View 1 (spheres, rainbow, N blue to C red):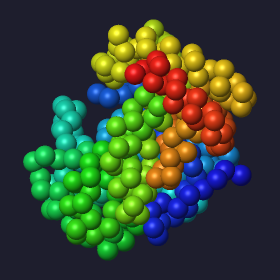
View 2 (view 1 turned 120 degrees about the vertical axis):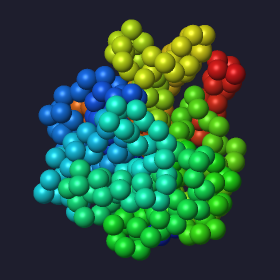
View 3 (view 1 turned 135 degrees about the vertical axis):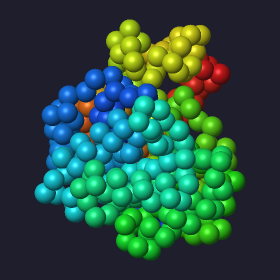
Amino acid sequence: MMRTRRLGNDGPELTVVGFGAWAIGGPWEFGWGPVDDSASVKAIRRAIDLGINWIDTAAVYGLGHSEEMVAQAVKGIRDNVFIATKCGMVWDENKKIRVHLGPESIRSEIENSLRRLNTDHVDLYQFHWPDPHTPVEESWAVMLKLKEEGKVRYVGVSNFDVSLLKRCMALGPVQSLQPPYNLLKREVESEILPYCLKNGIGVVAYSPMMSGLLSGKFDINRVAGDDWRRRDKMFQEPQLTKEMAFIEKLRPLASKYGKTVGQLSVAWVNINPAVTSSIVGARNVSQVEDNVAADFEIAKDDLQRIEKLSKETIG
């Protein structure tokens, strides 16, 4: 049975691994290349069968397609699955994307997400990215109103810093923060995670395997030509060689537990006391089965060993 943790002070119990539905959205500006929709639906159903009780998606993933796949997969069992989605990344008729958290836009987005998800409520509704052109207080007031109306059960944010969290908290509670967090991307450790822990804000970490880089199976030559990782500095030289060297040093440690480097990486994220759950993407049943096996504890001396290897290799 997979472990669960409470999301924030008064939230639901979420499994420590959640199903990430970014990749199943298929091709778009920040897509992962082509996907097989039937495999996506099977992956979600297998995740639920294996005990994962929540799914993280977003309106913009595949420009609505990810939400539609989630709806197909949970048909008939919707009430047994906690669905989180996001607003604030909107697109026009030319599929050009921009960040926008205007009050009327949020209202429009929730209705579209409810329709695509084929549900009367979203369990967790989140801002996707900060909007520098809209006062966050105006945006957050709408989220709190949606909660009051029952269209969403909990409200949270993604990619917010402490100053923005404080501005939201002044109006009403923030249930959760979704930040990037993994062995290669640790900026949130200094201020953001401690603030969340102190203030009862749940943390659902995304990219615990750094979008596949920490999977132990990553090969840049196998990444699709239109995959967003082709354009990201984390996946380019000279950084990539350092990262791959670090991953190779983690391999014997993962083997000690009978795990892959990817499973070790997810388990490492879940060690942090601020973290409620890690969002781990999957496009097929095999990946789901690997992800479920990431629910295990790493011994204290091995955590120290990981820290040493990180400093030696990554700096």
